[in-house]
Length: 597
Image (cartoon, rainbow, N blue to C red; front, side, top):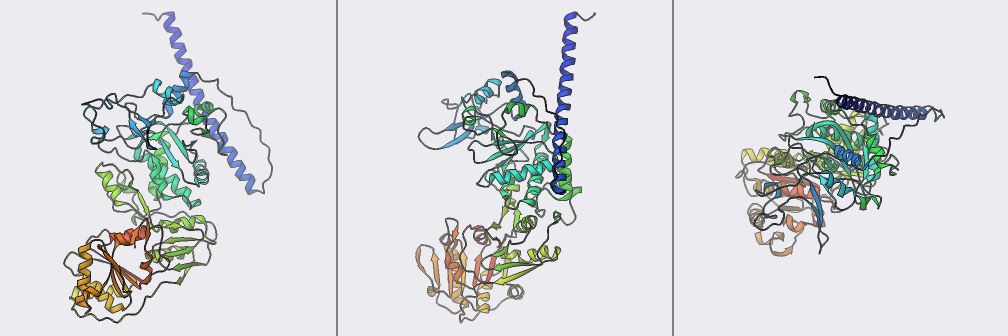
């Protein structure tokens, strides 16, 4: 049967629409290339003495104003996540509490909703409402505020977003978007709801594996840190999707959607140009923003994986590193490849060894400062354990950093001295250390016990170093080794424990092996009044570590012994440090999962 005139017209309309789509894609590609060429020209001008060169510019044609339906359709196409459920912002009526909950038709219905004891994702009576054009329109008109769950059921995503906050967010965003331009990745920069932060969005032309998208984002962050060392490592935890895999019974992390009217009127949730000024026509910007081809995302993530530049960390045996999917790309050394440093490095770098190692930043290029900070960071095994079990990783940091960026110094654990020296030697530089540690007060004490051959070997090795960790099974006699170290070093010593029975045990063991009255041993915590001798004392970590700071008495001793290495971890992460510093550390543990001291 011959097609009717009506069918022919419909076919021609379809062909013209396809042609318009093709032309629109070509226009976006041309705009991206034009912007890249202009940036290259600007760099060339800068390299050649800022010569002024006039180039002809062709104005980009502005598309016709989008209709209401076209705006909603564009919004749903860009910010596309789970469409079978969406989170709605709620605010407490009698308090300052605020949060998001998935919208459910049975919410708070008697005998159907048991919110609180039962998670929404595990509720047998859940009836989540889908994302519709009406829901999006109400968001844009300011009638409510919604978010989106970026990770789809098959663990892919249509977009990736990087979140920046804190007081330095503007400088961080400028550095990050510069990296994006260098790699030629189109992005959309949005001011956050509060106005004190920003989101950088990347939109894909087809769904991309969440793990692959995150690798691309992590690579961009790592490249940015090489130029701006102030960028926090917690930025890796502010990528959305926030997980590589979907947790059981959950939806993954959510991110708030932009362009909510009430917030737009305050200048927030708007898209900004590179000068951090809002675009005059938000919809024009979004409609002309190129999508990133899936092949490009996979290529960038693959190249970063092969070069070890996903993060600046040594690959840990976490059971969940980025090389699990492609183990053939794992470098034999399991160590990342540091980015080359082109700026001059001082022949000598000044350091101060006190309660921590302080590296003076004067004269150091930002890329080297960043590499030094990476030496004091490690992958959080708890994060990867939970992720492998598909448990929630909420508030679990992917990377734990023990370095702190001071005004003139980088402070890091003292155990990093050797690593810093090795890194500097690669750049033909040396670390000159000023030792300001506290040697403690001399004490008269003798050991009256007898060590086994294994204990003798352990103590011999420990005494050759100022810092050390004893890893031995229960019953090995780690408490006896601690008393022997006190007798050999003959300096004031503080023993740190985490339970009252351990405190009593140490007092008894010190009394036996050092010929002292157990009641005369000083103590802190355990329900008794603080009593310090300044010679050999035992303290509970709970009484020393409060409000993220360590009691200054720790600095009064020449040696600190920690029973179980968890305590060293707590002190190592404290944001406030005692002013002085002991000369030696020793931690004992029955667990091989050693942390930095």
